[in-house]
Length: 485
Image (cartoon, rainbow, N blue to C red; front, side, top):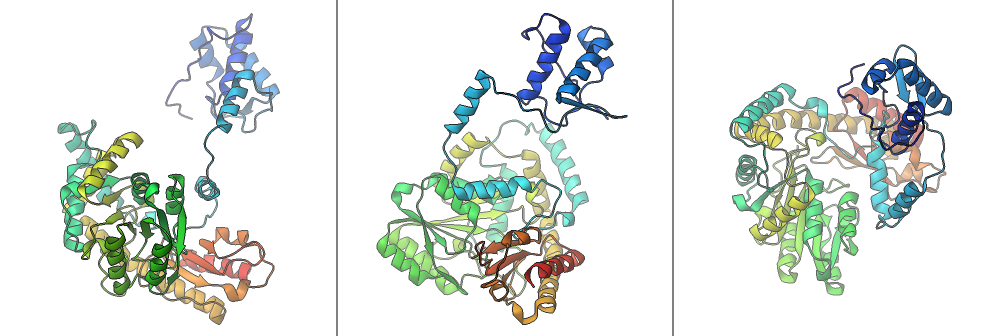
């Protein structure tokens, strides 16, 4: 196994009368403090002895002693590793102080803890629920890799790998501006564009910049949990507004406005999350009229505008008359893959200037190589070409998923075929109502659960089909049936 870096040990400050004891104590300390993580491969006894200037036998004896104590484990023909399960030890006074300090940190909300747990277990090699993510296997690897190579050469020659504009490279901001002006009917100037690391960062920046002293934040009755957690974490009180097949209920919103001072309304109007419904044009215009009358911000999360199948998509709120208070958030991650971490924030120039100041505190700037590569692909028309290709693929997967649900469940479930997006919103209340049901069983079958509790089970599931091919959709629906039926 290759070792890209040689492990260095400093024994000068380690206590012990002999070299054997000092080395043993130091290795134990490095494991306890986390510098040597479980499963870390240790240096060979010969190389470590040469580096330390001691006899190899001394290092072998130390390794054997630590293995007997449970700190190390030897794997035949592979080497010596830090043990996956470490022996329990009493905390030193120094480490006890660290633990106590950690308990003094500001507590996370229950929603935030739940979201974090879901994200962290996603690294395990087991199926996890998805909410309609794109299929990273469809990414145009060769086209993108060539663009990255050209970006590397250009950035090196033009000295663009240093610190730059926290709003993003001018190339990508210009490419985004042109796309929004030409394809989304929006009138956007360059100072109104800020590049972010995915739409969630745009949402968090908005939650940081809006002032909770100006009022509550209004969310749809069913909404995107990470967005609500972001605003909660920055001190906002959350008020829910009704939702139906035309999207946000603007009549109920007017009632909320009569009872509360409102700082902003968060909305996913194109394909509402999680129900997939599209906000009607009448309600879009009413929402903008209310925003002007009551002077609240509208945060428009347009997370998958590209994937609309039935007809021409309704223009974004930001493109309509009276959109001065709209903060528009979009994502390029849905076009390619979530790991690309690329989105954009569109608002008036003063808001973008404040956003740039916050970016300076968070991560200083984005990745200029990624931004240059994607901007080139946008200018060459490769992004539009890729969108046309995958849009047809996702439409076929939507139709196949709908067919499978109808074939397997028949009239026991119901759903409306969504006009776009990468998920189905399926009513399963007829299968779960008044039944003993463990909803955690569903978490491995590409669904998110809604309106449920441990006793009655969920009333709806959001089935993400975007990241699955037809065989995977068939298998997942059949496995889902084995739990629900």
